Amino acid sequence: MHTDTVNQHVRQLWQDDILPSLSGLVEIPALSPAFDAHWEDSGQLARAVDHVRRWLIARNIPDATVDVVQLPGLTPLLLLDIPATPGGADSGTALLYGHLDKQPPVGGWSEGLGPWQPVVRDGRLYGRGSADDGYAGYAATAALEAIRHAGGEHARTVVLLETGEESGSPDLPTYLAHLADRLGDVTLVTCLDSGGHDYERLWLTTSLRGMVQIRVTVRVLDAAQHSGLSSGAVPSSFRILRELLARVEDAATGEILLPELNVAIPPNRRREAEATAASVPGAMRDAFPLAEGMRPVTDDEVELLLNVGWRPTLSVIGASGFPEPADAGNVLRSASTLALSFRLPPTVDSAAALAAVQRALTTDVPYGAEVELSGIEHADGWDAPEPTPWLAKALEQVSDTVFGAPWRTISLGGSIPFMGLLGERYPNAQFVVTGALGSDSNAHVPDEWLHLSQAARVTEAVAHLLDAHARG
Image (tube, rainbow, N blue to C red; front, side):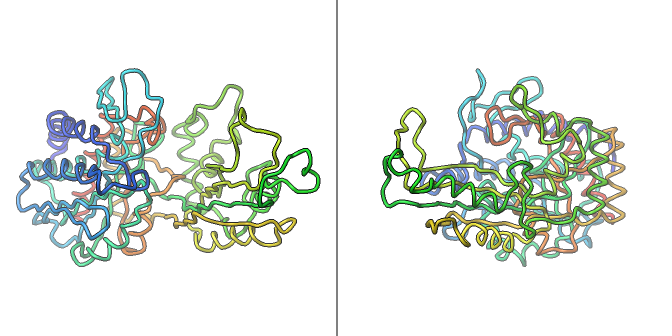
């Protein structure tokens, strides 16, 4: 396959065809179902699917089919199915994944920017869903077109774009079962919903943390009471919550105390963290806008990377039962509720972790207070298989020809539910989880933006990897 031809074709596609259509996709407020209970009536997810569907049809890829798959009551999927080139007919199915649903707009966008307002500035496309991860379907299709244009090979390829990823992909297990025969023997999975620590190289995500979410309510009274009269006789519901949390987390260090939520960090992942820290010094330490005078939990960059990728954490992400400070009276409140988000090491059994958390929060509760658990969710993480020889060789070649810098890995602290599902269903497949996101791309928050040059380079890389996969 002609490297220069791939480069030229991809760059031209991004400039002339992808950027205008992706900008149109940014304009569609296609909120994920978790943030739009009336998504079917609003029609925005369907609108996003149709927008990309029409673009795919207009590509006129020979013998390709473009289908919208939607089971009753479930969010729609968009599928692009392209037959193998002659040299890739015996290589199984390459499955390329992205999503079209979006996070909420969130206030506080900079002047001249907005969630549904595509703006190109300094090589960046601003707008919600630009980087996370509306570009994925375009990049995957462009990679396939470039392969064919440059005389390369690819296996039978399916581009799957879902519309529920930002809600935890609740419909995906049903769809994977429904499409199992159609997908066939998946031997390569490429996910473009990730990224890395800079825009200088190809980053591969080699693991994803799992999660447990739970809301815990502690009730001490049937009705609130005057705090001056009742405190000292009735314990504060918040104090009891603090005691319960102390069973699962060391407040001084953040260490999670339950053995079911901890694992030994694999030596290969520790080596990867050391290589990343050496290649991009300060990648994790400088990644976040810390308040003035604030410092990270450690100055050891390797330990920071391992904390985010391979150690369990607890974040209190919400609360109720508390009035605003300006409205607070001298009242001993009847109950307190906290929303807890546990991030789990990639290989932890999330169901066992959830059971351990539930036991810790409900057993021998101080003073016999009433504890109610609700909003319970759990999902396993994912740990990638080691690259086979063809993939390891292809990654080295791509790093040299496309990026001019060695590829590196990231153990991502977040979750991509699709990866765990596919890892279980296709245990012999190779996985390439990558993307154009950087730590400053502002996914989920104001001023989300896509690094256009990095997106083009990632597109080129995918083309070369698909060609290598077809040739074995």
